[in-house]
Amino acid sequence: MQESRQSLSLSDCLVRNEQTAAESAGSESFVLDLTTGNYYALGEVETYIWSRLNGESELATIADDVCGKFEVPADVATADLLSFVTQLVEADLVERAVQR
Image (cartoon, one colour):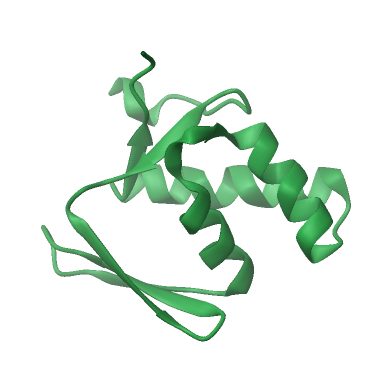
């Protein structure tokens, strides 16, 4: 198993793959994997999370921000965030940021 596919933790920072392009349409987005040609539709919360995957924010911080912005319980925000970003990692749309 590749390192980027190991279990994610809330202390991880993720960064979007450079081989992706995203376009917003209102509160939703579409992400295109330029390598495979696959595209993904993101809802409002997913779009917000995608915008935060810049390699600088820990997943815990993003989960906290989702709680405040979308008024969801912390356990729900955390579980949904980890599920979503795990799917992004598995699709090679994001990876762990290199710590400096």
